[in-house]
Length: 63
Image 1 (cartoon, rainbow, N blue to C red):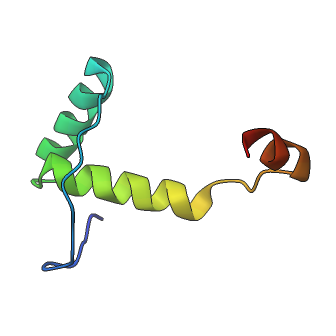
Image 2 (spheres, rainbow, N blue to C red; image 1 turned 90 degrees about the horizontal axis):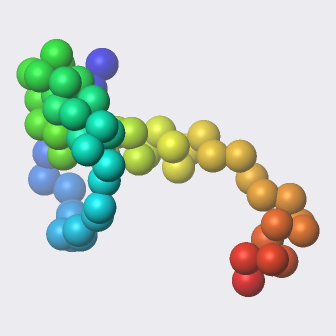
């Protein structure tokens, strides 16, 4: 279930998102009767909480 706190600090950012992804986000927003913004925030939070840690070699290459 989609639940986000109201009144949290935020910033405006611009992202380029593929059309097919936007269509899926809009469909979900309609199904849950919520905004695309809330869907995106929840997806990002979930991804950040569940991302696999990089091993040492990959971290060195990114630095």
